[in-house]
Length: 116
Image (cartoon, rainbow, N blue to C red):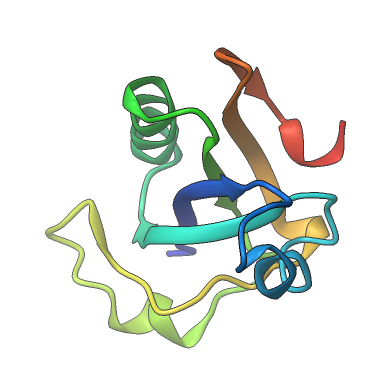
């Protein structure tokens, strides 16, 4: 089974002291993304539901990114098949792995915001 990575967090504004720190390591995008929660999911449907729910209920600047790595990872072999999700340590932050992104920008839900 190949796991799906889901990251949830907030887009930092330029006046935030942590802006530069988080700008450098996030999917080669123009956004500074501060992760607040991440997990591995075994089903894409579950990941989509979690991503959209987080952003819709979240504050301005809430975001979610779904990654689908090209190959199995060592986490895949150790995943408990009886659960839908588990905590993750870190994503790959590779543009090619990004399957879907969504954010609340200016009060609107913006899909695939990372590379617009």
